[in-house]
Length: 263
Image 1 (cartoon, rainbow, N blue to C red):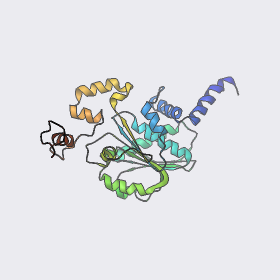
Image 2: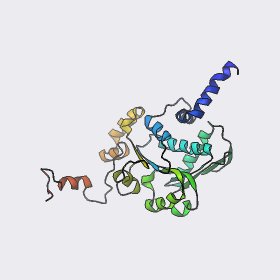
Image 3: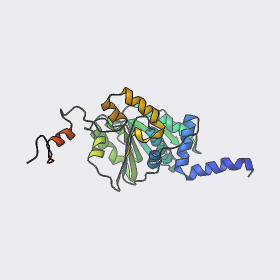
Image 4: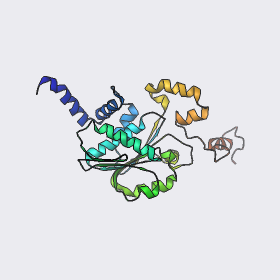
């Protein structure tokens, strides 16, 4: 092999063997510049919960769609089927476009493509659909990706529709910025506990060094409540209760000084 071909060969080999190197290559294709994965992105890319779920509570503009698209490409390479759900059709087209961009960094050959579906030469398929029960029923999937889970309309109905379509060893990835407490995504974090079948990842804007200037801009321009929700990814009461649950608990606790101590 000529020496000047050795470096590209080694880079390609590294991307084949290392999912993080492949992810960073995908990002560089999208951004037209070298890119480095955040620690949380590495964690999400390497997350392996066969037959289980990974839930990612992530601040706005942190790169969650990049992670979901990469998981989609990884499944295409294996010849599997990925179903990606999003609240709106516009979002399904956007993530499909991102998957198509990343495919340029692989050896895969696209056999068929639309604005919301891609099929490659391994037999793998990536299908993005808006999250309505009537639209998503009838598929069988090796992987499920649920984007902006907190914003799904009729979320319980949607989740009930998609879970049976996942194969026994398949994985499901939920990703969203919080949107109140009265939804399926919030309950994953507020009620479920991490286990071998459930991984919970929380990514605040203040945890990501590259977002420091954006975080400060949002701190000055957003209301305190919106900043807590959008950047600090807190589950804020959504207006269905007059008092936040934490206020009620503090006022009726057994601790000394409570307004209405429990008897």
